[in-house]
Image (cartoon, rainbow, N blue to C red):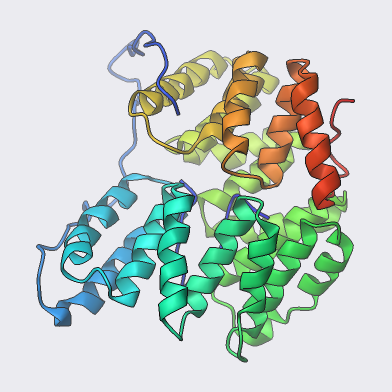
Length: 376
């Protein structure tokens, strides 16, 4: 359901192109221009590798904290720290269930969904206590629009401990397959407070409600849910800011996004908001965002195609380029935001073939989005 994939806190995952022609470097006009803001506090250290199994639990706990910080801040450097710390264990303890689960979390965080699912499938097939792996697999299947597998995984969650998560998981699948009203009602009945949800579990629950309520055009309910989830980190901030932008509440979106300029995706959202508000800083923010994306493309990394499509559609006003990235993104991700940017890019670029792809997908899945129309 939600690209801002808030799983239960025990999963601690992060949502994070293609090469293009080099662009001119962004050269600051003076020494006062801030190019980057580093995270507060000391740089996380990577513990030296150890072959001792006794050191494994503490090391994996440390990696989980790094993944949690990456999710909260949206800073991909923490993913690099986590990868470096996990690497020795992939060599010395490759078959350990927690090592495999952590590897899958990291692969998912870097948008390597197919590789993550392969690891999870092996883990689920060979281990009995696999609730975390099953839920993570269900999340990946939902992100990729594989509703059949997602539903199977949700049904595989057994026992009282996992019942609330199974209900939310099932509601998310229902919400993407023609049963949005039923799904929202089911989510509302989950007694999150009585169950003692952690902040991250509660954020996952709230964003699930916000996504469906938004698509059903239940404006007040969607906003309440977005606001409830918003303090949890960058992904929730991005979700609420995007909603504010679509409501044309640009000044509120600007206030929300300004502290997050270090985050590439949120910087792009800020750039389009400043453009709408005709701020004097709009051109500089656009140039900074474009420089970030060119650096990302030069590294030839996976992921961020949705944000690239958004940048070229709403900031750079290049609908053909936006459509190219939206199509690439659609091959890997099919959540609400992916559908919306693809539909908007197809309409802006007057692409009848892409509009047909989306209409066929809507027909086959039953996906409901009363906010977005697909060009005929």
